[in-house]
Structure formats: structure tokens, C-alpha cells
Length: 146
Image 1: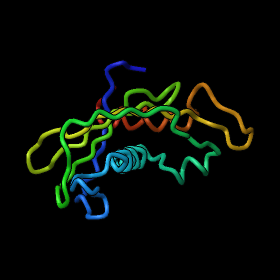
Image 2 (image 1 turned 90 degrees about the vertical axis):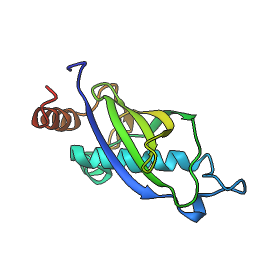
Image 3 (image 1 turned 180 degrees about the vertical axis):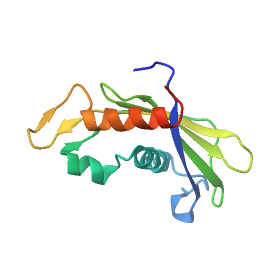
Image 4 (image 1 turned 135 degrees about the vertical axis):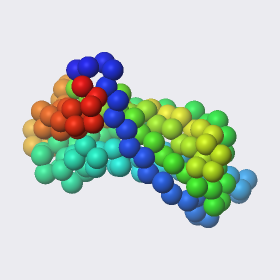
């Protein structure tokens, strides 16, 4: 793996009223949901979204997640949720940035780790399946990342 690879995707959306807490800001747990929007955009870009994972016989449970809250989002804010792939061979590590689309300010940062799990064998894998690695590397070549 080239340690200088860069692969990312974004999802854009508007903060909905049902995401707001009694303090009139986005409830802290919803930021994880926003990360998921970006993660889905990234996996779909790779061509290995949740449907493709299941069809290939693997699932990728989240084994770790961290969040750093910097500035809140409010009802009606436009958000750009960015997911950046950091690791794809031994596990999937993704870095996140939630950006206020109007101000350009990063509101929230985070990271997640997912481990491959062979659904048929019912066991954890300590490397990602070849199909996933090949799709990532093909996209990197296509985008000039390697």
C-alpha cells in the first residue's frame, strides 16, 4: 500500500428539526449518524457499499469510533460530511470532517475503525477481503492516487 494515498467522498444535507436537542443544537449522538452518511458515500464510491459487502460474504462492524466536537450545528444548517480513507488493508479506518457549508468551518472531526468479519465462517478477519482491496486500489489508480 502506498502510504500517501488519498481517497475521499462527501455527502451534503441540511440539519433537520428532529436532529435538534432541547438546547437548540444538534444532539451529540446525531454526529455519528452524519459520519455514517459520509461513510456510505465513500463505500459507494469504492463500489463496495453495504449491499456489495453482504453479497461478497463479509460484514464490517464498527470496532472503534471517536468524535471531537468543535462547533455546533443548528436547525437548517447546510452540512458537508467528508469521509477520508486512511487504511484499507488490515481494516477500514476512516477520518471524518463535518463542515458548515455556508461558513466553511469544520464543526466536528472523528475517526472510525471497522474490521472484516466472514459471515459464513462466523469469524473475524485480520485483513480486508481481496475484493475490497482490489476495488480501493483500482479507484486509486483511476484517480491518480498511485
